[in-house]
Each structure stands twice: as structure tokens, then as C-alpha cells.
Length: 239
Image (cartoon, rainbow, N blue to C red; front, top):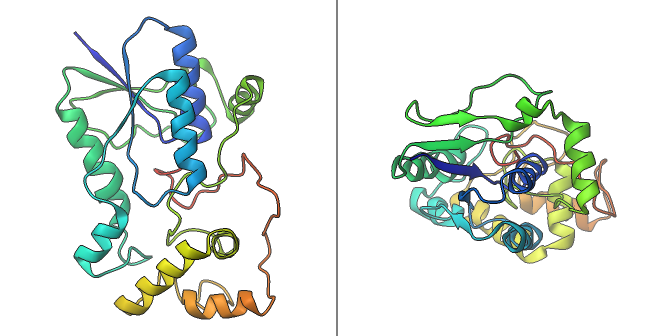
């Protein structure tokens, strides 16, 4: 017997996929799972909890948190050391799937995206229902709007080497304790999350904070959440 498994990052595509699958197959025993890093913002944690009220229990597949890996390596994930996705997302996912009987993995890649096959084991049957349904971005957003489901602006880590400058500003503004924690990690390890020379702003979070405190505001900062403006800092995390 096949095991039907749905990868549920909590982004717009995987959320739409999961909710539609539940509608189409109300009697099918799906296993919903996500791969949290322990560094998600409160809105993302609340979103998973909301989805559980609709779908049922969501299995958290994890080994260690982002901060635990940082402490273990005494290194930050950055533009040179991109180990976070592999250790926090890919490897736990593959280990979880390997324990299941004849897993069929449902992945939320859309019809208007590059035709990738995914990062999964050859022993796993991978299907892409959004592509089969012909759902692109307009269909996904329209469906979520119809259902009254709002996606958090940030579905990935609070501290990501690939995030935009405006996201660092919003982290400093809205979650100063998380920003301070990330700043302290940089000071302890002697490296930065951000790439030097990426833009005209300082690379270190300490110097970046000084700029923010002076009133300097990066372009792209929004006072209200753009609920569907999920960028592409980490493609795996933001599916």
C-alpha cells in the first residue's frame, strides 16, 4: 500500500496544494509534514497551527535547530557556506521519507515554474498536482483568496543569508530580540550573514543596526504586510 505524503512548507503554493488535496480526497490518509528550522517567525508558527485545524496533525520533521547547528559548527550559514538548506531541510526530509512504505510525495511546484523534478530520492514517487491542474500563480492566489487564507510574509528563517535588506530592517524593527540574537552570533563567530559588497550598506548586523537607528531606511520596506510577496531568498524554504 502506498503512503501519501504532502510536503507543507506553509508557503502559498504548498498551502494551496494541501487545502485542495483535502477537498478533493477527504477520505485519503495523507501525512502532512514540514521541516521547521526553529528560526521561524511567530506568524509562521501560527500558520502551521491554523492549517492543523483544517488538515489534521502536521508532522514536524527535524533533527536540530538552526541555532544548534550554528553552535556546533561555530559558523554562520552565508553566501560561502550554504549548509542550512541541506542539513535543515533536505536531509531530514529524505530520512523521513526513507522510513515510509512506498511513499508518494506531493510537491507544490506550479505549472508556470521551471519544470524541475525536485531533490527527492529515486525510491520516492514524486507528483506535482498543481502542474497537473494547470495552476499557476494566479490560480494559487485566487484559490487562497477564495478560502480566506492569508500567508505569512516570511515563511523561511528569521535570519537568512539570502534575505533582502528590507527584511533585515523589518526584523530589527518588529523583532528586536531576534535581530539582537543574530547580531550577537556574528560578534561571537566573527563573520556575517550578509555578503560584503552585496549593496552599499554595511555587511555586519551591528553596523547595519546603527544605520537603521540613524533613520536610514532601505528601499522596499513596507509598513503593512504584503501577504503574497514571498521572495526567492531560499527556494526550498519558500515553496
